[in-house]
Length: 155
Image (cartoon, rainbow, N blue to C red; front, side, top):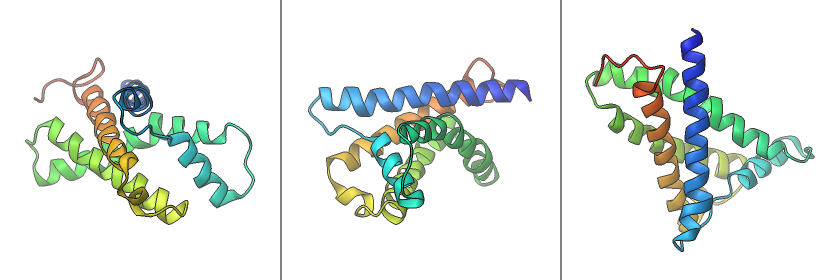
């Protein structure tokens, strides 16, 4: 149990850093859109609760990346994959999970909760978010499946 907790924390921390580095650093450095996950988190909280304290969007973004999305892989994506195609390579599952995260973030959260256009109107930020969520999932799933606390018996 303790090993799983450390795995979730490490996977969430590293993948959130990778997501932010890609979406807020590398993407704009190469002339593409800059992600604003804290802005989306803040808008979502304001839609749901009205007035919110400063920093609440940052907290939601960090906690979602550190815990919720890593747990989502362990509790939802991985069990489904293991029931349907048990020998599927972890990177394929991670890529599919990243696309699922992108759909969740840009349709369910950004559109249905925060009131933005679906997938933020399929602008440049949409595609940076697409690749950013895949990067997040690849890093998280790598740490979970192959990282220092993982059971490396599987390929």
